[in-house]
Structure formats: C-alpha cells, structure tokens
Image 1: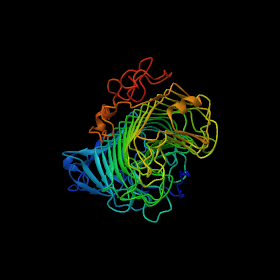
Image 2 (image 1 turned 180 degrees about the vertical axis):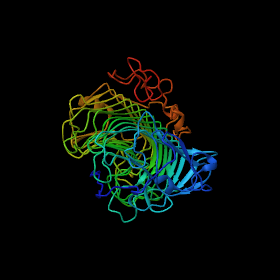
Image 3 (image 1 turned 90 degrees about the vertical axis):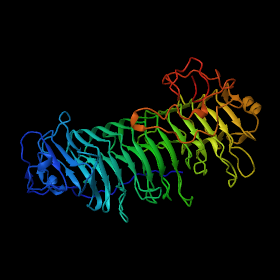
Image 4 (image 1 turned 120 degrees about the vertical axis):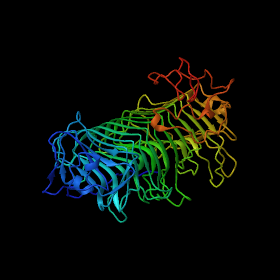
Length: 564
C-alpha cells in the first residue's frame, strides 16, 4: 500500500535574504508600523495616516523587538514578506513580533515571488513570531503560503504562531523536483539544508484551502523535521479542505513529520487528494517519524480521488506512519474516505521502531469505500514490533462494493507473518459490516491471511448483514460458533449492536475554532436500549477515562465508542 519515503530536494541557498542596504525603521522601541496601498514609503509608518505603501518597504526596514507590522484591513498588498535576523535582529518569545491587520476586515497579501522554495510570508529564526488575522493568497507561482524555519540558529527558535488567517492557493510549482509547497510549511530542516530546531509552534483557527476539490494545492500544514527537532506543537481549530495535491505526493491535510510532543485536535479536514495517482499519500492527518503525538477530536472525510479512481493508494483518514512512537489517536470521526479510516503503518524508519501506539474511541463510517486499502482499519506492512492497542472503536460500513470480488474487512493485517509486540491489544471494538461484494458477501471481520499473532483479542462485538467471516491465517471461520471454538478471542459478542441510526452519521455541523466538537456528532452510533454491547466490554487500564461522547467509562464498559 505505502512505500513511504518523504523527500525534499534541498538547495544550498538562503531563502528570502534581505538586501545589505536595509533601512532602519524610525524608532528604537517597539512600535506598530502600518502599511496601506494608499500610503507612502516616505511616511514614518507609525500611524494609519502615516502608513507605508509597499511590502518592499517592510522588507527593507529594521524592527525593534516586540514590534507589529499591520496591514490595512479590506485592502490588498502585493509582495512576499520576509522576516529574519536581518530585519528583526533581536527577538524574544516573551515580546512577540506580530504581523496582522488593522481597521475593518482582513488585509489580503497577494504573493508575487516565484521559485521552488518561495513563500508569501517567511519567518526565519524570529522568536515570538505571530501571524494573525490575514488573508494570504497565491498571486503568482509561489510555493508556500507561510514558511516557518530556522536557517542559522543552533538553539530552537521559540514560540511561532499562525492564527485566525485564511491561506489558499499554494502548491509545489509545476515541474519542481522538490515536494516543498502548501499553505503552511513548518521546517526543522531549513531550505538551506540547516537543521535548525523549532519549539512551541502553534497553528490555530485558520482556514487552509484550495479553490476547488481538484485544485493543485498541497498540504494544509506540512511539518518537516530533522530527526525530531520540531517540539511542542499545537494544531487546533483549523478548517482544511480542497487540497487536490499534485499527482505524486506524500502529503496530508495535516502532516506531522519530525515532531516531538504535539497535539492535533478539533480540526476538520475534507476533500483531500483528488489528483493523487501515486502511493504514499494522501491522508487527512499523518504523523511520520514523530514522537508523543495526540490526534484527537477531529473530523476527516472525503479523502479520495476525484472524479474517479485511476491509480494510486492510501487516501486514509488518520495515519500514524513509519517511525511514529508513543502516540494516541482518540475521539475522532472519520467517514467516507476512499481508503481506511485509521491506518497503522508500522515500518521502522532510520532505526526508529514504530510504536507503542494506541487507537481508541474513534468512529468510522463508510471508510474504504473504494476498497483502496482493504480494511476500515489497516495494520501494514508488518506486524508491529512494539505494542499496538486498538480498543473502544466503532466501525460501520454499508457501502455497496459490488465491483469487488471481496468487500473491505473491518481489520486488515498484511503483508507477511509476524508476532505483534508484547502488550498488543484489540478489545471492545464494534465491527458492523453491512457492505457487500459482487457475491453479496459482507466484508470479513479480520483479514489476517498471513496469520500474524501475539495480540490479545478480547470482547469485540461483530455483526454482518450476510455471510459473517473471520479470516485468520489459512482458516476462514464462517460462523460465530466456529470463531468461539477456535479459542482465539476471550469474550467475543455477536449481534446487532442496535445503533441509534446506523449509516446516517453524515457530516457534522460544528465550528472547529470553538474548541469543541465534533462531539456530540454523530449521534447515529450511540447505543439503543437492549444493545448486546451494553456492559459486555472488558476493563482496559490507562483508557483515558472518557469515551467518544466524553462520558466517563465505567469499570465494565460498553463495547464500542459509546462505552459509558
């Protein structure tokens, strides 16, 4: 499915260097500098009626620590802003340097710079950099909307914030050998090849998007580390959509690569990967060679080729990919993705052994509708060497897969035999398989054709519209009694889970920037009275304390995401 190798062609140049003849701004203390299309570069810039006129004036001025550059709301300025240690020579996380709008509405910055590593806004080794309340659009063939990097520092650049902004239209330039490009780039491996670390990166409450489903826009957020040198990252409250991406891509709506300590929560990501014809992308949310990442309370849907599948693979909802360790995927709603809702891509990368990782209390509706991956949750390509815990999830599909010889499985394990890491667990999950292949058979609960072993199976609930089947090694168990008799699982349950309204979860109506949601949506997968899932689960230690609906989990939980 995924031959994962992220690559970035690095050129030995310094992006966005300012001219040696930089002109000092007019004050030694922090101030607000105003910029308006109706201003004049001969003005002081220190008040709206003394506004500067051009982006070039901003780039060739020197700003005291704690200054603000404010662009006139409702107006468009053309150019590419560059801030680095030349024009912001002293910066501090405790005294932020801010770029924002003033007056009524958002100011629009329309980029005019070109090249493989161009960006509409560059913040290079500026501590306390804040970009807030701007509209940033690609007015040329600019690769990135916002670039955060550290081209010369050996200690981490601190406290970088992009918030409340609308950023659109950015992608890897046509014909480029690089994969640099997208709405926001967060680089711990700078474009000059320097491994400059970043710490405390916050990307909050932005709208990151293309103009249409098939736009060429790259990732919404593309984090790219050197090792794991991008630390303490928060990505929350963002709306990410219409990222068609180039045909060959390894990106995602939100990509965490080389991050150590990250929270990705309360984001909605949809309509990603329409143009992709390769493997290794696209995904809704993806972590790669990262550590201690929590992916929670997100809605991910319509990660898919469009208008039709031609070639390629993936299009999964949420992916903990190669080399990801000590991470958790919880309380997410994935639906109507062409590939799996949840993916554990268990490969070792540069001696980084995947896991231990956990997937818990997520809801998946009608994922893998194109049978791109083969399962609603995939664990590939190898048996995980460290513990993998999968518990309290609800998987439902009623997709007609009548052009396929087999329908998607609930869990798909491949591509070779192996033993899962000690402590691995699959428990308290619901697999409701109402999809049907060309023969009218529902998808199998497990497709473990290579006979992977070592995980504990306990108290999962299974239900199929027709022909229930568990494929384990060389044996297909076609009745629940046969599965029980095999002794592979403790306390399994078979029966209709009595969801409130299965198959009608749909798209949630919520506001990511509110800091809540998508809960209580979808209500379709709460359990009705009399459900065989009620009180039928098994206690799992360290379970996070609450279920998908944020109800407290009792000592003996219900099976599935509605565990309380």
